[in-house]
Image 1: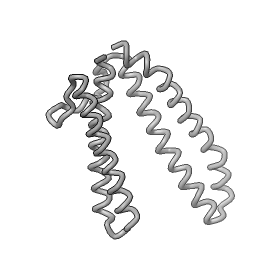
Image 2: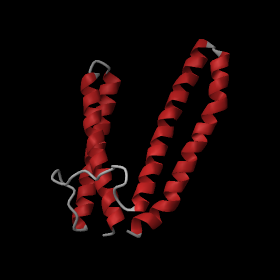
Image 3: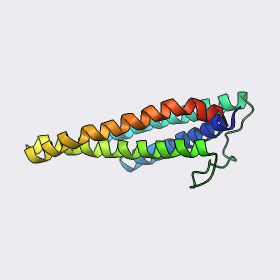
Length: 151
């Protein structure tokens, strides 16, 4: 198995396990909000299933993804250059996603309060954030095959 693919499998496995833990924590913290509690619990189950399926796939390829395996490092300057570029693009994509969600929340608040100035601001800026998302997503799609299979 190519090192880039193995690294990405490990990162995703750890990410799914972390997301499952975070979803369970949210479900427990907001147990009185029945929809949040139940949906977060279901989504945590999905992430656990994803982690299990990733482990099964990796085992078939001779790779271990169990708890004893250290989480792949995301420290600056570590790893092959291609993986660093993909990590940086992923970080940019996640940051733009967070900003997009904030724009969406502001848009909903502006509509609820009939704040035309805030709505105009959101209308002017949010599409550019969505463009940032599309750009990072496109680059990740274009570069992943080459970078993950060449390592």
